[in-house]
Image (cartoon, rainbow, N blue to C red; front, side, top):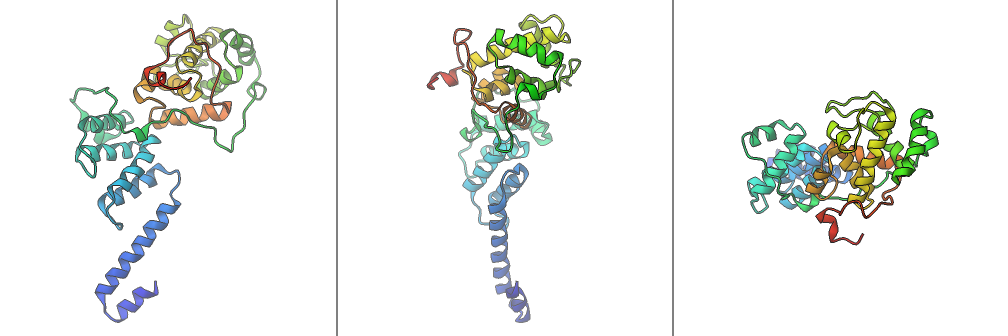
Length: 298
């Protein structure tokens, strides 16, 4: 800071300006080194690199930072990436990628994105940048596996212990899903009309033969049947199964992994933290895997 006072005393405004810029560069460098998991901070730092605000313009660095935040489900970063693609800001123009990123942000309530895509026919061709894809979320280090005996004991626990083996499902996985979905409330109803302990949507309940989603045994049977199908479809990948349980298997197919929705990412992390396993045995003869998994060694 002494350099500023020295420059002021000598009325050397040119050198003051140079010193000020040097100081700002040091501040931004310090801030960047301390940015870790805040999607909002990553997006703000990316914006500075994109627009040369206090740092030298660096479109690649901006893109990388936006990608980190967008992958974590931050809609403002998804919008900013879309803008870079739409206006060829350091990237080759890609209208399909821009539209999909605007759609992604709009689906999470981003107002500017919602306005931009209004009246435009939806594009479901996957044109998103590869930096947004990931197939697995791992347990965080400050969590340990919870055994079924640490969950509330009673009717639900007894039903899961009795029914899960019939569907080749680890009771601990079923209990983790129930805990995150309904907190063991058999009368739970979500804003999207998912119902009961395992929060079955009406079409999912019908698909797996559930007549009364508020009947605990029927609900658990339906949820276990769905988990068995998802485990077979996604070849035992618990992250993909949890993501599909939350957002639908077609959404996971579309994004070739866990969708970059903040709600879904948070949901998968909660399930993984409770279950503490990333894979689960599955039955191969139920359904073929999606295309994006067929080229991988299973």
